[in-house]
Each structure stands twice: as structure tokens, then as C-alpha cells.
Image 1: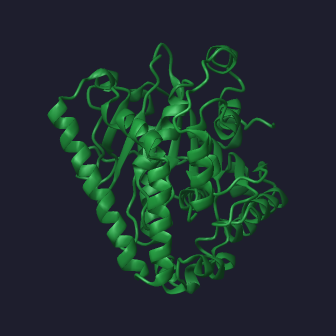
Image 2: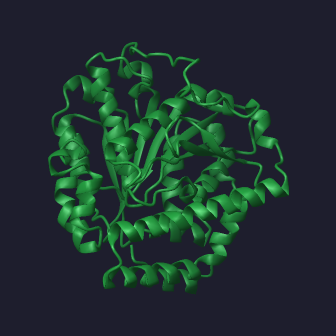
Length: 403
């Protein structure tokens, strides 16, 4: 695979604007730097946080139902989702225990002053040298996205010596797509500014998103490239991102309106999320990429799009077409397809199986490509992750999944 150019070779010195340290919106510093990673919270604090997170997830579910309307289709979808969750519950419980009680997880770090401007950090045990950082924007149909959805990916990558920052952001109806893109950009800026404080390497920052999160992250990346190419003042530079990883994303909203409507994300709701039909081109990375100047294209990092060919929530053609558009425009892009994999196979079922996870292996191979020591330590001789859910449960859940 072609490796991305270094930030210095992609651009000159960007007009980076420093944050006003006196502003109320300034994100707080890490809780004691790296010392905060090892701090043990009390059992009472952990239980209280778990209760708060459970309340929020329950509230998100009811917001989703209220937004979509409780018709017969959605009652069936909800029942399928509940059965799906019950079947995979043994794995979810173990991941949840890790999320709430591991000292390697820093939860709810404030990165901005808007509601839900929080992120979780997954820190590797070995902090003898700066580690690569992945900024991960979770999916959730722009309605139920939540930072904890990235816990399994965060754990798997942290085990391979990679810091993961799972970003929370305003969902609909609390915000619309421009708010979500703004929040994602704010989180990226925060990580670019503070990565070293958490033991991260500021020269090895990667951007990743899954499903709706892949769309939001792509919008933020291209929007920033446009601003930077036009000489506008910015808080982070596109050249600070080594690679963008898009997992199961949709990149042309105009082409997906009817598809989502048939899948249950009704047209009226989706257009409200996207701020009306006229805004669809603005928030369609595929359309935006066609109009980028050579200067903006030159700023972009390597873009790698992952997608399962058995994905019915967002067809794999979405990634293939976006990849073709990027290549035609002169960007460095690659599409990695997983034969027969569904929307949740790559992100949920495969990691729960244990062993070598195709997505994690592909992502790690890119991040560790130029680090022979990391490849030897984490890739060639690393122990295989344990299975979290029995195979019959995974296969049955796959058949029942509403995604």
C-alpha cells in the first residue's frame, strides 16, 4: 500500500490559529498528564458513571423512537435489535466491564463547550515512547451516535500500541449535520493540540469514522482542506492527519435519501438531519471532492475506505464510487472490500470472535508500516485476542441484526 506523505511534504506552513486559553470553551487539560491514566477511581465513582451512561443510552433510544415514529416497521426493527443485543450480551458485558473499570480508559474528557463535547481515550499499557493516535468518530444514523460504541475497537487498537480517542458529538434532534461536523472538527483540533499530553505522537495522528461517523469525519476533513487551501485561519491542519480511514460510510447523501427511506430512516427525518435537500451537496463528500481545487487535493492525506460487500445499510458501492472520485481528482485513495461482510460484521461480530480481526489488522498494518519495532512487538508476536461470544450466538445475531 502506498504510504502517505509526511505533513511537511504535503503543504507549507499553515495559518494555524492558537486557542485563546482564557476562553470558556477551552478544553480542559488531561487529568494529571499521563499520571491520570493510572489513577484508580473509587467503586462509587465507577457505579455512578455507569448509571449515568446507562441513563443516556436509554434516553437516546427513546429519542430515536420519538424521531422516527413508532410504526409497525420500527417495532419489528426494535425487537430485532433487542434480540441481537441479547445474543451478543456476553461479549458486551465484558467490553462494558473493561470500559467502566479499566485504568487504561479515560472517560468523558471535555474537548469543547457544546453539549456532549466529550471523548474517551484508550491508552496502551506501554508508554515508553509516544504512540500513534486514532481519532474515531462513531456511527449511529446521526441520531444515536455515542462514544462508548467505539469501546471494542479502542480496546483492540490499544492492545496493539495505538491510542484511540472515541468522539461524542451532538446528535439529531439536539443538533443537525453542521453541528456534528463542527463537533468532530473541534475534537480533531483538541487531539492535535494535546496528543503529547496523553503519551501520543503528534506526528502520527489518524482520523477514522464508522457509518454515519465516517460521513461526518469525511465532511470535517474536506471542509478543513478547503479552508486551508484558501488561506483561512484554522485551529488544526489537514497535514497533521497521516491517513483517513472510512468504515462502512456513505458519501453521497443525494443518492442515499431513498435508500435510507426504504431502510426505515424516513425521508423527512433524514432531510431534517441534513438541513434540507438543498444542503445535501454541501454535506456529500463525494460531490465536494469533485469540486476541490488542486491545492486542496494536495493537502489531503491518504484515504482508505473499508466496506463489506454484504452491507445493506449502506451499499459498498458508496465507498467504491467515492474512492474512484478521489483518485480521479488526484488524491491518494484505496478501497478495501470485505467479501460478504455486513454493516455490523466488520465492526462488531468479527472483533467479538477473537483471533485476527481483518479490519484491525488492516488498520494496524498501515499505522505500523514504518515502525519495525512496533510490528515486531505488537503484530508479529502479539497474543491473539480471546473470543468473547460463542460462534452460534454470533451467527444467529447476524441473521437477526436490523442493520
